[in-house]
Length: 216
Image (cartoon, rainbow, N blue to C red; front, side, top):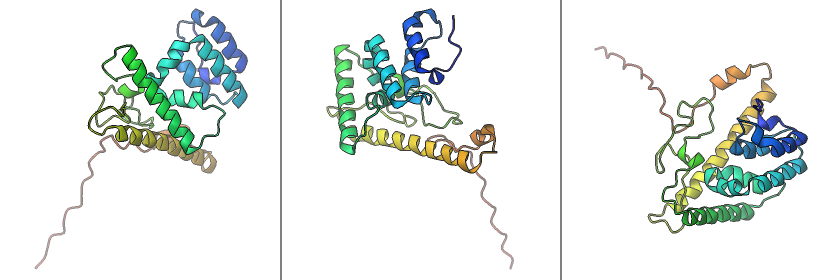
């Protein structure tokens, strides 16, 4: 049996039913379930917190590993319903990085290519490099996993990449909202086709005008 629906369209009751019978569905995906909680627009903030708590109880180990696989979703989930200051946000990310290092050490994992760290995710749906598998340190990487104990001063680069990704996501949401308000008649397919590609993607070369021939 298959779900055959986007999880971010579920109601609170449907989430409860899914958590109780998830083993029956062949297309069930734990990562998709956690991500759908933050994306769902049908749930109230209180319901999102309840669904998050019930989901964490059902998949505690996966939720902990989510800090490696998709730390941005993890951050959104643990801060649901909270009004964060800059200091609060910074401390939450520090806790995530500490837990990442602890999990890697406890499982004796040498590499850091996990989930969002192993794919090109610039936030632009029209990017031809979207979801391309990459290595840590690649110029196509939007963010990298770094710790204070790393050599070469790469810790600051991790922080900069995290802030860049957050700002880009917020900028995309503002643009989409403005398009819906100012141009509701424009088909979504047209807007999608004209969305700016990501900064890292190579752009087609433009021919420069030929110089005028000098007359004597």
